[in-house]
Length: 232
Image (cartoon, rainbow, N blue to C red; front, side, top):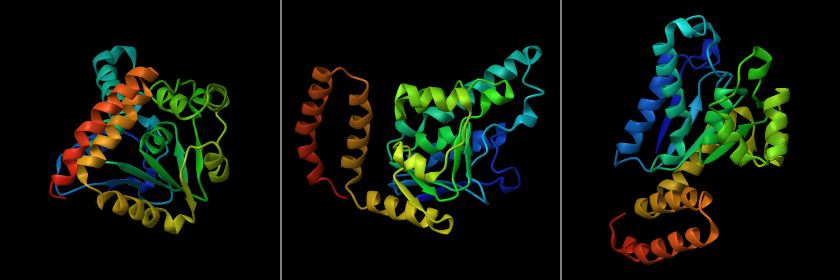
């Protein structure tokens, strides 16, 4: 099990290019390490992640289109990557998780929220569209609830987040990482081949019509008999 921690506490772990690239590269490296079976994504300090670092936006203009495209590509790959990792990943979320930070939090397979959670998508209040976090939010919520969240920019707390199914556990702030680690350790105890296959099938069937989803399940059902003969 490995904890990947965002470490810009003085900026509430706001996502500048450097931090976004560091998250992306750290998660890839962790996923490729055969000694690691589960991942915790955390944020240092009093907040998980305050979203995009607005101080970089002055340079992200039509005059610097190449820079704009590169940043959009990096952000897109980082926001989308958690479900494609072969290892399960849980977010440990305290304090602010807004915009891109909210996207990272719910992009993980599970989420542990602290009682001081402030979660939401306030981008439109800053004349920004939450474009690269919209897909993950809509797939985690019903359409009406997701549209309310992005269009009104209202921040919600932990109790509302768990009632909406956005998180799995609500604990005290000082317990959030330990609770996420407990989940990760339970994952790590499972056969890694079975865990990886279960995660891949889980997201595969979500995007398939029922008959094709059942066919994919049948294929894995036959294949999984071999997992028990593999060394854990």
